[in-house]
Length: 160
Image (cartoon, rainbow, N blue to C red; front, side, top):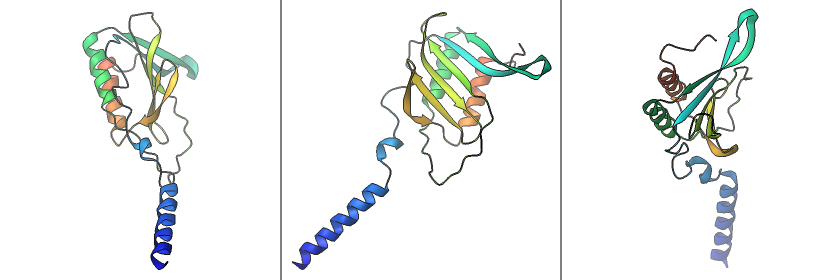
């Protein structure tokens, strides 16, 4: 009887630990590339301030397959973001940047990656408009995004 109650206590302890621990599935990336090959056109959307301080969105379309492939590789190399529930993110006033991938110029965006670089930075991937979990990020998200931006626009952000 004594061993039975120890087994019961151990089982209860394991159950409580399992409930308190986040599921491991949230720490692994979905199988396969989040930005698949075969998407040959990239559309970059970025916040832009024009005359009089008015905010708008700038758009740049890239059809250079080498650049598109490099950007795809950089995004697919990003690790999964594992949010720390104890971390408090500052209010985010930064507008997001997005990189959309489509098969041809003018066709619908198949994969869209939205980069939020302020607050608690992350990259959210959407496949055909559906949010994919988990988010991507890691310690090098900002530098990876800077590399992506440099590939897309070597001269910097266009001014209009």
